[in-house]
Length: 171
Image (cartoon, rainbow, N blue to C red):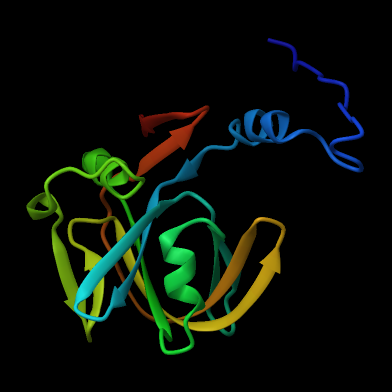
């Protein structure tokens, strides 16, 4: 099937860039894994579904997560006293957790929390990372948080994949 070319769309409302809807539709063609970003908020565990995770550097081991300014997680990660965050890469069997942490929570007891040195992570995930906040970079309506990976563990389970606005499994 030949590639479909969509000519650039510009308007006075979006000088120098395409409209948000077009941007979302275009980047929705990039398959990504689904993660839950976690942090401790006093006695409460907090999490947020995110597909914007990037490996930045091997030496030092850095990752980047993108967090919308409107998200509760943004307010939490912006606090100076919050120095670490977790990343759990969801397995194909954890679609319900992506939904739970994207604003449509189900029963809290279905979240398989476990703690690593006081930081909440999601059990049963394909991989977990514990990161120290390394840098926060304002970028439009999001902040890019660079994390120095201090701990990781992983399995060989299949990940949950997000593509064209829907969940998929490998194979």
